Length: 345
Image 1 (cartoon, rainbow, N blue to C red):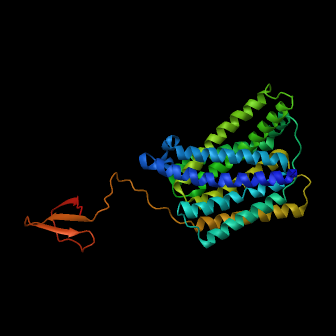
Image 2: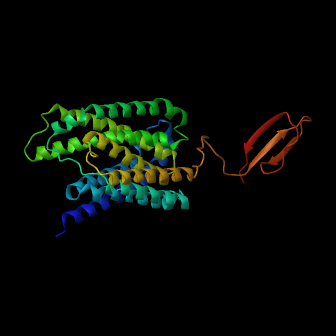
Image 3: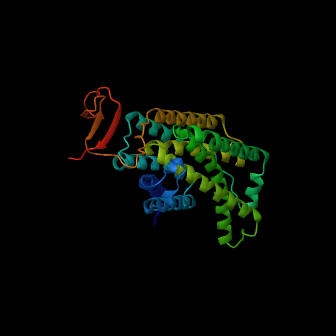
């Protein structure tokens, strides 16, 4: 019989494989949906009718369920670093299935993100054991965490209302920043819901408390927002870059939110705090390298019809004589009117 830690390790590995694969499957679905309608990156929702996108969503849900189950059998210090394996899975699959080439420096960036995130988790403090939703509610209404929540909502609104319309298509940090900041609030809400479900199954009904339903509404709102902007990021930028940057920022903001809400760093030694700082610097360095080595995606073709046959141009000169020239020839003589049609062999 496998030990609890081994079960958690296996579940975490399965989770990383499913989540990493879901990025690729969803992007292929987004590409298919973009052929027949507005792309997700410009506000289109045609992907909701694309079966391949839903397969990717189901794959991601299975991965998240496996990840949740892994935390039941193994400590977070073992499970969380293994989430970085989803980056490797998505990068490798994107290289072969989506033809999104990962440069050597990009590989170094991935490695730095993984190493930095691992250092952060390995030196993170143990969290306090909680036994009710009311306990989490008391932590959530602390002035420090209320200030963090207000700052997170304010920054998100600025990114959504001001930055996204102006530079969302060119700056990868806009969409992923929204997902990461909102994601930190999602985790806090999901943790409360998980405790409520566990206690309810053990016989202590937590559904009678209004705090449970507030956490549930916050979680649903945040998850919908995350999925929307994650789809926009995947549809706009290279998957091999989106995955590690999203992982790095999401992990960083989640640890920050947890530290404020649960006071994780009270009583921490200076060496542990220094290690955490080094981990953050490593993650940020990897993110910068990945962003600087990103290959530009091919331009979006907006024409309804793009000819694949040789093109021939007919020009009416001033003396009313016709002059024919293929596109690859030199520049045409002076003319008054241009009539162009596609020539099929």
